[in-house]
Image (cartoon, rainbow over all chains, first blue to last red):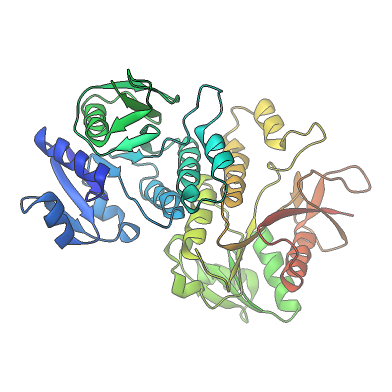
Length: 211
Length: 211
């Protein structure tokens, strides 16, 4: 598959890039800074240097999958980039957009979104904007019925680490065998490439937890 | 005020254009087709010919108000254009975006959004996409806290007609003295220019009904 990864030098982006390359896909890192990308991904990495918000349909039309692993300290940019990518692919039947969301839109055992507890416990924390905007991003995606999209939420703890084994879920917070809601970047990367090779979640969000 | 109107040749756009000009504002029609704009708005009309989705920050930065009276047979473009305009003005404190929504996001006497009844009674009507997407557009706007925006919903019947007198509301469907949920383009235009001259609804949606 031809795969473009926006934000390929981030923790998640790098893990996905390496997993997809390892499995023989033709992967392009879409990044703002070529030098940084070479440093993080190596000299062999195929790179498209462009600001995510300047990407055109022509830049992306050749990809089978465009993975949005973009991260920004301006949390609203998660929503803005999702809206921009959806706009670029309205009515397109070739390319699938793959969004990496946060965990806050998953439901906890009480049946509420995790966001509710996060807001209750951290009302004034500056980082609250990120889970909030990523929930908006998910809600926005649920409105979109004429673009091929898939989304994945990590768990409460999304940590840098190798692929081991993962368990898949849909809309619920999940736990590993030690009772922790945790997933590694490596497992998320494997789950994403698995979904790309055997798509099962068109216009759906799914989640994975470490086994 | 410097006012730009996207979709100024539509029924609502034309009424707003004429009301704002009549009250001495510096009004620009932002339209895809200059010839049509001259035909509808006259030879004196100030025109910026550009596709709404190609507008840049530089095109719009000089306006105090940008009014989104855009209409498209592709209903999802109402949402897409709102997202695009919000993106252009993130963090901007000078310009206010003014969105004309539909009535479907207003609440009927049962306390439900009018959309619910519309969907129940017209599930397979092709036009259902327009109220649906305009509800999405409103929900999207409620997430935006770093852009100056205001929105107006007309009533169930939004008809071409002159300004008479209007009564203002917030989130409810309203009725005129004959018990009809109706508002003219003329009254909506007056209400919009009133709001521009005396802003009371920053980051709020309001509605008006014929008296």
